[in-house]
Length: 460
Image (cartoon, rainbow, N blue to C red; front, side):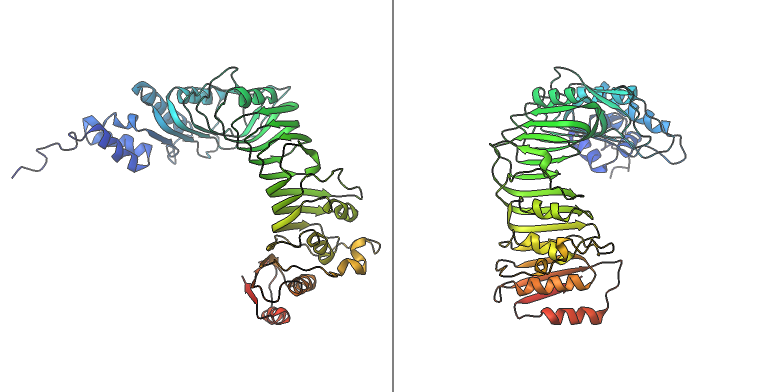
């Protein structure tokens, strides 16, 4: 029998097997420490195809030690001349850790040379970004010709520059947030340097107020939120999903558009090639005065409509007018109302008159009428409380969040159930508000008042 330790079996393992073992550790420091087990293991960690640098800071050590550890790890990889399938650098939220632009740029240069897959860089938010006349600490994103996914979160501390004519030939997914960018550079980058880009998320600010133009033959999903953006122009024949915010104006050409989430729909012009029926429309509207938003009806119908509306004291008539321009909702209607001036029941009835074919209704928020409007407001008229001949025969599911058992909530629920089919099964989910206790007796009385053989009520 051989003595224990006479055969160094660890050193006999193949490099591929060693890399698989180190990958299972899911820890760069742990992988590096395996070098003490065997001389052959000493540099194997620098050839792991997935490099995650997010836990190198040790409590009690100066924050700069983490930054030096990042640079040491990247230098070791760079020297090993090995491609990285996934590189993740997540700087911990360490106080007094000031990261300079030159350091971040050097990390990105190494990534551009080694990453053949996914690149993710996240910096902790520290101080607000300071930009004077378009200038600030600049970080350059070098060409990453083999990167397929890039996610950058730059802590709101840097201006991200994009090199002209750089190549991102393999890039399909790009996320940039908490950075400042030049509007023209951004538009040129997406339009001419990323021929395979399908998913783009931008949550940035522009160094100066300007227009942004995005033209892409491959883009399928676009999420755009850029402070100081004046006008967004999009021409994307494959685009299916659009999420846009903080825009003064937008022009969208997207023949395959199926889902849109926008703030202030009237600021978005959809070209004639955009379908008149969408799968989902999510809009946020402000009704602060009596003048309705200047918008003609653009969409005829939508499967799912989500409306978040703030109705001010003087804004109820503009709300009434604007709802008449909304597309007819066919399947799911989700409503979130804020403002404490107008009646809940007439407001919801007005919305339902254009959505009589829905199968599901979701009420996300509820605001009590604590600062009532004038007695001359249309929401006070008796006819505003009448459902008349309205029927909701297709309605199968009702969900009310922040349910407080208030009289107008119960009144609306009773009216709603009375307009539903008497034979089709109907599920009602009432999600109680944690802010207001709901007496058991009141709940029982309310459930008895709407009880029907085809009705199932659940209280959460």
